Image (tube, rainbow over all chains, first blue to last red; front, top):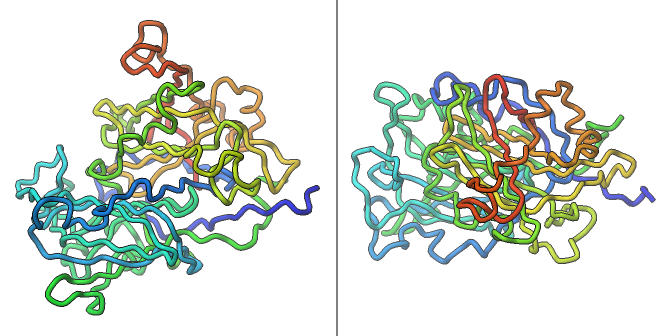
Length: 241
Length: 209
């Protein structure tokens, strides 16, 4: 009876990729990071499945942040596109991506935002997209500005776009930030530098792409996002005797 | 191949621009027969409420099935989209969140049929400013003493007071209370409370998933 029971997929546990929860350079971690060791959770049915949120959440202007109001927003128009892959190189199709960002002046449209930079009546700074069969996504938006914050004296966040991704399993859920090449604020930003490995930090920086750039219209940036991979075979599960 | 993976970054203080959506807290519509309302608050290491956290829940349906093609038992009889299983709620200024859902069924171990069943549970992710990566916990149900005692994940946590951080408690739905049926927050169904403490004496158990 057990011979034809399919093995559950399992997802590798990345080490030395994600930032530590306790990171003194980022003050807000002080009272918010767990101090007891994490407990190893075997990957069972709840973990190898996950929400498959789809088209019902998407409207046509969701992926074009420059078309969500009556007029065009201020700032440099950009195209951000890339692929969502797993770490074994497989595309992740049909998965929801959610983004949010400042406007060109470095101002978020949020009630608790106090940065004295102008709001843009033609820019909200939020988007959604679903990857296609090849894992591709594409947004049209405005180059976000640098943003001051209260972490330390004269603290400025480098320009970034927040990305939220689901993948196909609970284990693959990822919230991250996309940065821009050549930004002088990156070397002094605690959040960017909370990722210890310089090569891993580079994976958060989009690449300028002249091929993607559209003449007389918009600069192109390419950014691939890589989620945890799915092992093809399952060894003894952690909770086996 | 972790050398390729994109690192996590904090959700920051302004995720509410995009991530919450009106039906997010409603895994099932309010008033659904058998609905359970989970209410709770999120606290930091000083015991202060966290007003800018995001809670996400993921769970099986009442039959213990997932609306997902990787569930090796195949599609639920009613199809993949019938019960979404996903809830999302930002915390309010008092650190509170609310999810309206159905109690999931127990889960077998499909590739280990003799193995222990998992007691009904929700996987819960917490995102917030100050969390550079999400933290993951589980919520179990207080009326499942026998299943909870046999649950392999709960059993892997030796200390009783640590295990209890994963257990919801019957909520403040006494007649006349705000969460009672007919009260301002009341769903007309059962109310459970599940508080989450990121740090401190009663720190919630968090998992390496």
